Length: 155
Image (cartoon, rainbow, N blue to C red):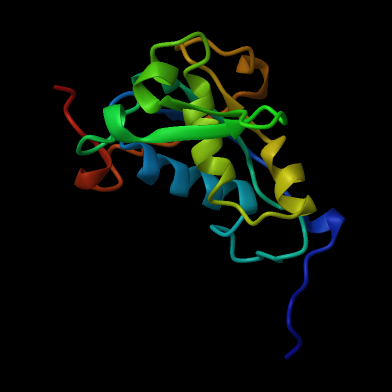
């Protein structure tokens, strides 16, 4: 019996729609990262982009557990001396681009290589409930019903 290794002809990409409203950020990101890599498929091949196209809506309504909403910091550097900057998760979620919190969480759950950057192009995150991908007729993946710990009631 030979080990199966997928070729580009074997890859079948689907479109998945996930509603992030009330879902815990880390749990959502791990499910999305698994779908992007294709690890949920029996024909998973580590060196091929065989994951699905994932659409995440309502990213601005994602939940964080504990005090992470106010205490979790996102850092970046401007490139100038002393140019380290930071924002809390709350500032980003209430700002102009709340979808960046979900995008960054998923990106950090993928390996740091060329293939992961290619797989990130298959992720589309939208702050609101509307998305322009109705023509692809995405399947709805209900993350809330997968596990009771995936949801959190907002306070």
